[in-house]
Image: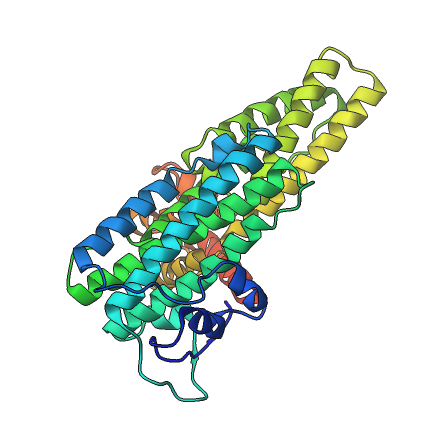
Length: 380
C-alpha cells in the first residue's frame, strides 16, 4: 500500500489536490486524466442522490463480464470494451468528486502527517473522512484510467483483459468503501461490505483451488502408460475450474495460465489420445509438469491479506481448544467444525475436515497440522 501524503484543503484546485495525493508512479501523468479544476456547482448533490449514483455505478462495474472477454478478439477489446470501461471510470471520477464536494475537506494537516487508505478506514466517523476517502479513491482510479489508455497498440488480448480487470476490481473496491463511509457517517444501512465480500470470495477461491489439486492427485507421479488417463483427468479438472462461480475473481495471470493449459491438454488429447509412442508420452509429461507447477502456485491464495487475518483468528481458536485436550484424546466434533473455514489452507487440515464423523482424529495429529500452518504464516 502506498502512503499518500497529506494534502491542502478542498478549496484548492482539484488538480493540485489530486497531485498531492498521487503516488510518485503516476503523479506526473495525472494532468492527462483529471480536470484542472473542480466543476462549479450551485450546491453538491444530496446524500440520497449520491448513494443512488454510487450504487448504479457499482452495478455497472459488477456487470463487466471479464470471463466473457476471454473469448473476444484483441481488436474488439481495444475498440469497444476498453473505451467502455474508461467511460465508466470517468463517471466514477465525477461521482467521487461530488462526494468530496458534499462532505468537504479536512483542515490544514500537520506538515509531517501522512495518510494511508487503510488508516482512514479505521479513522473516526467524520465528514472529512468521507471526503478524504473519495479523493484518495479518485487518485487511485486515475492510475487505472491511465493504464487503460496506454495499453500498447501491439498488446495481446490478455494485456487488455488485465487492464480492464484491474480497473474493475479497483472501481468495485472504491465504490464499496466510499458507500460504507457515507452510510456510517449518515447512520444509514449499507448495502455493501467490501471486507466481508472480499473474505467470502477468497475463502471460496481457496476451497475451489484445493478441490482442483485433489482432483489432479498431485502426490502421485503418473506412470508412463498412465499419462493419457491423467491428461483426460486434467482436462476435466480445468473445465470444472473454469465453470466455478468464482472463476472471474481469480487473478488474471491465473486465468491466462488456466486457458493456456486447457488448450495444451485439448491439443494433446486430439493428436496423441490414441498414440502411445515415446514422443507423445514425453509431450504429455511436459504438460503435466506445467500443470503441477500451476497447481502448486494456487497455494499463494493463502497470502491474501484477508485470509491471513481470518486464518490467524481461526487458528488461535483451534489451538486454544487443543490445549484443553489430553495428548491421547481425539478431536471432538465441535472443534473439528471450527476447521471448516480453513479448507484449502493445508492438506493435513483438509484431511481432518474431510474425515467422516465416525473416524477419530487424534489431537496430536491435528496439533501438528495447526503448528505447521501457524509456522508457515509467521514465515510469510
